[in-house]
Amino acid sequence: MNQRDKSRLKRFVPFLLLSAAAVLLVMYFGTVASALKAVLGIFSPLLIGCVLAYILNIIMRRIEKTYFPNSRKRAVIATRRPVCLILSLLTVILALALIMVIIVPEIGNIFRVLSDSFPVYAATVQQWLAEAEVKYPEAAELIRENIDLKNFDWKTISQTVIDFAMNGMGGALTSALTVISSFFGGIVNFAVGLIFAIYILLSKEKLAEQVGRLMKSYMKPESERRFRYFCATADKCFSSFIVGQCTEAVILGLLCALGMTILRIPYASTIGTLIGATALIPIVGAYLGAAIGALMIVVVDPMKALWFLIFLVILQQVEGNVIYPKVVGSSIGLPGMWVLAAVTVGGGLGGIGGMLLGVPMAATVYKLLENDVHRRLDGEISSENSEEIRSEDNAAPTSPDDNTSVQQETVENAGENGSSDNS
Image (cartoon, rainbow, N blue to C red; front, side, top):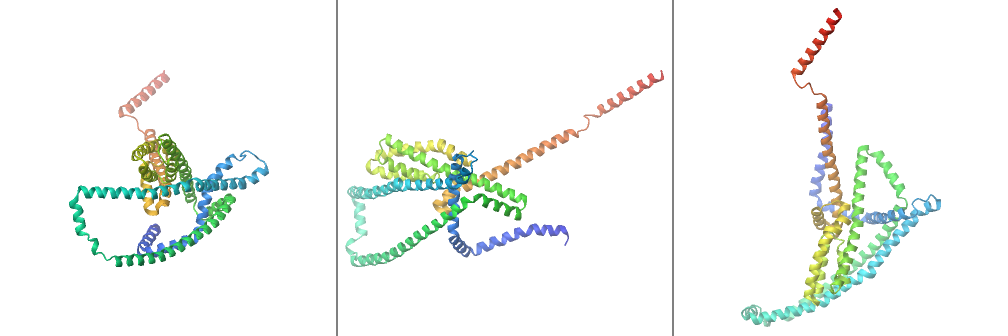
């Protein structure tokens, strides 16, 4: 085997390994999924810590820019990181406290209004059925003939209901214990993750230096450059999306509550809070909040529910064409069509979390592809220009007549010089 065949085989081996791994993944998908779930369960506190560190770092970087940025005093430099970290933690705690004080009671109010509305809906349905029975007596008689209530075995039915309730209570107790254990386990994981995030943020420069040394030791310079470029692009897309989406949700919730107050639509603060909370889910969230809000208002006044939907459609147009492109869209650089596709695919794969992660991930892929396409096209254009310049420089004389005329002029000049010398 010569050197050329060896190089070809060396290039073919990675594709062969990837194909084999893909076949094994398809064949043993259930086992692989269970193993990945177990591994994620073990490393979940560390993953939570990394996510918390990333979110807190977004706030901490902004605070560090305002905490005596030009000061050279040792006391300021030594206290900048701990003070900014504490301020970022306090900011998150205050935001969570604000959610618990304002948003959670409003969400409870939403469920209370909906539960109070069900009897009204039931009475409306009963009234509609009574009117339908008067208008269509033949249909009512047909239903009574096919469904004989007198022949029902009510004792058997009641015993079945009791047995189902007893079994359901046991299942409910087991589910309650599972939920309680999961809740306390989640609290422990969150606490461990928060401590891990604090350690990461206090020594992030040292960790970055260590990671850089590892990459230089085990990666080629070109691979290291590409990996750093990918991480920088992903960081920009994710941080811009988080900041922009939160800002856009607050603005949309405030505008909704203010507009409903001006139009004297009931539940202005409650529905405004709901719209702001659901707006964290791109595109789909606002329509979900609109459906719940209209269901709440229609019990009080159906006409105001119609006005609410008209107002929200107008607000959605303003939000989609003015607010979102300025606050979120321009920061992540992802067109609306791909945002919708990312939300749909992400929601199908991971629910609400998938919707939230799908947009910045799609924005990262879109940005990388866009930059690569521009680089390739610019390279082709520059190569075409260089070829044109090279062809112009190496071009021959325009025609043979020009060559003959130049030769004739040279001969004539030589003859004139010779005759002058002889004279």
